[in-house]
Image (tube, rainbow, N blue to C red; front, side):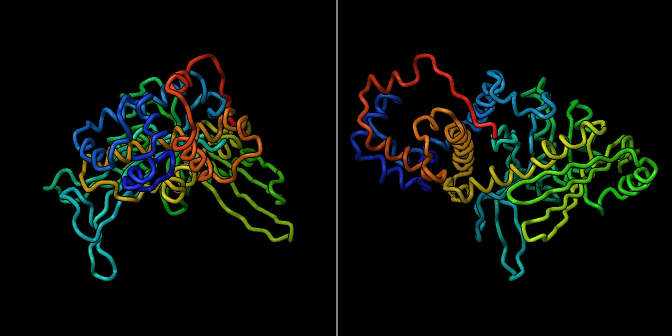
Length: 398
């Protein structure tokens, strides 16, 4: 359903059930008579343990790491970049369940919604693999405040460290998480972090950065390059070892990196954007540029290649695949599995070898896959031997 971008359980019945060649593939691969009815999936998913499906996702990413597939995309040739951000999944105008989060709208109506906090492994070539999901919901019905992204982050961090205790991780976070609790968690877990820093956030840190920057003019570098008919000039400055005491009287020593990027187009029109991060990487002229361009700037990939693709690229993330709480989460996790597989297909050398001229958009890949599943006349023996033998898949690193 997700790999072929069908968009709903109903389309399973229309596209697969009653199709003889599709039924033959289900019999060969899954030893069932035909594609299960969409309602059968919903009924079954009510009883599946969420943790078991989550473990499949973790195992998939662990396999990619163990086979060194993701090694070329590590930050500073060592750290796996994990971007963490929240996104809405489904919304209702009537209470869906007792765990719904609520928000009052300007028109007086109440919106009931279910968000999720995602940890995705992102890479410079566009991979955005789900590593772990933390559902944001009001489990404690007696609590004064609703669940939120920060609370979910604390839970997710514990699970992430427990599942991948030895991974060299660099967290990429937005400004919401720039604070003492996050710094303490990363220090305790021996994680690196690059967190977006706003000018009006962590006031004492920003003021100290400005002061130290004036006293250390040597902490500067720049980069000029051309890209897509634009001339890009980046000016960097940084400061190390900025003292910060959080609201819990915990002491931290932070480093701040700033990038002023000026773009000049073919019409000689210019625009300047400022990026600033707080990090626990020691900053120097050799590290500043890669930490910004190959690190902090990659956080947006969880939004673009991650959530945006899943919402608007045919996966229909915001479609309510089930009203049942447990089944809805299973459907969500299966979407993450499908998205990982689809990215490996799209950037893999086997697909480019089969279609050297390409097929256009990613949705066309899904259409080709649907056509093959419904119409390709493969025998049972051919189906079972597809994955056997020795072959190598390389991935696009551009």
